[in-house]
Length: 215
Ligand SMILES: NC(=O)c1ccc[n+]([C@@H]2O[C@H](COP(=O)([O-])OP(=O)(O)OC[C@H]3O[C@@H](n4cnc5c(N)ncnc54)[C@H](OP(=O)(O)O)[C@@H]3O)[C@@H](O)[C@H]2O)c1
Image (cartoon, rainbow, N blue to C red; front, side):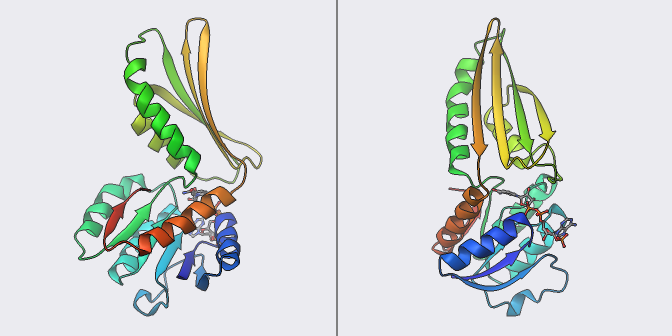
């Protein structure tokens, strides 16, 4: 697998290390994409963990030049609908995006989906989501919080906490008179996201056509 990485920050550096550990060929890595000649880029797949401001340029450049693309960057929900429609109009697009590549988040989605109906019959309960991340994280609420909200619309609020070097925590509190249920996902190491993104890249390369979230 020949990889090109967009983003050289915390995630980008880890992805480069892991990709090399796994024997993938890293053909390049940039922070900014203004000057990239996508057509002549020697890569099968592009992985983007950078900044929302350049997601559109990466999607258009990578997909138009026939490369598979994994987008891990968050904070571009306002462009999502239009970009997905554009990608689907291409002959053979391969684009996978996820606001959180941790497998535990998939478990949380399943739990929330199962809970939704019963919770709607508890009129005296209410639910909130609290997401906590390191102080460098620029977007809030987190993309994962917004994503989880779609599985459990009954949440009355999302609270964002930015402190220290917390890798990522999503906590759902469901509270009724005299009792509370909590569902918590904690990422202990960014490796969980990088491993997930590399898995997604190799999965995507085996597809003829795909536009969507983690399968
Ligand atoms: N999907 C997931 O599982 C997952 C997991 C963790 C993080 N993320 C997301 O991945 C992205 C990167 O996270 P990170 O922790 O690696 O961030 P980071 O350490 O801040 O690195 C950001 C990278 O993007 C570049 N960049 C390009 N345009 C930028 C701009 N306008 N403003 C700021 N940076 C810009 C930065 O370049 P310079 O250094 O030159 O500024 C840097 O290389 C974020 O959107 C984060 O929310 C997703």
